[in-house]
Length: 368
Image 1: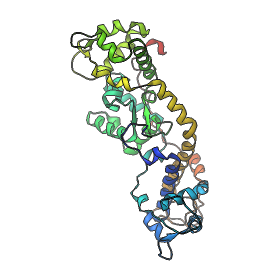
Image 2: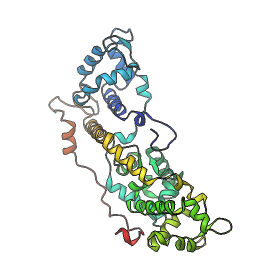
Image 3: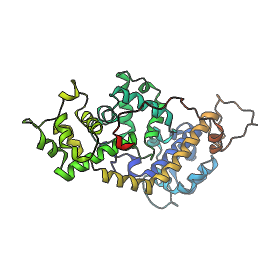
């Protein structure tokens, strides 16, 4: 369940379908009543603190519950009462946790691919035009080979302190950049999502080292000096059999030794520098990605599109379709009809950041 190796299991990781439906329920409740606590007051009309499934469905229908979620009402009801049981009997319903729960922001934001290109160019330029160095020195410092939304935003704070202007954007735009990187909506993005060519480069190197020496660490130990350290010249010599070009090997070496002071020729690669590659299995990562896409991704993508549509409708009209609750900031004489969310997406022009593509980074010739 802990796919992004964050050390915790979120509701979205444990039960992605139910989490997405609850996120939409929370959004609907907020648009109608302002909070789940106030919604409960409207549900529990007799003040007894008990509600059966029929009463729950009638309440949702009365206030325009989204039609595409009506098939999930029973699951939502069981989540809200805290157990699976007889839907005909009354049960105490609990909504306070919904107000406390903060669904991931990427469930409600459209990806901005142009902003991602500009962001990546700014970060890579700061890291000597080396995407791998940018990945390890800023984005994935723990070497987990994946970055979730929370850690991405923390990395943006650090980049902003380092003077990367693109990392100073508003939070919503940075989340849009994250959504462009996490195209599968799985809650994290990998090196492959960050830079596909560098991913294949590192995967080829790692798989070769493990097949030839048993591990990347043993490669360093076999050709290192008395202290077990390996310089650039020795690294290039002992990895010629990979078939990778000189520029590619230098790119890997520079990224592995990190942003230490001194010229590249004087830096040394140690066993500690490659320890995280022992945990990385590119083939397993690929299999997991295929499994996620085949089992969950299509459902999540459809739900996220609806979330985004509803969010855009609410931003433009101050309420969701079917709502009788007016936002005083959006007065209406009653003649303006509420369009479907999908229509708003089609009608509302998308704001694009007109920027040139990022400058070319140093990549080995065989990737062309």
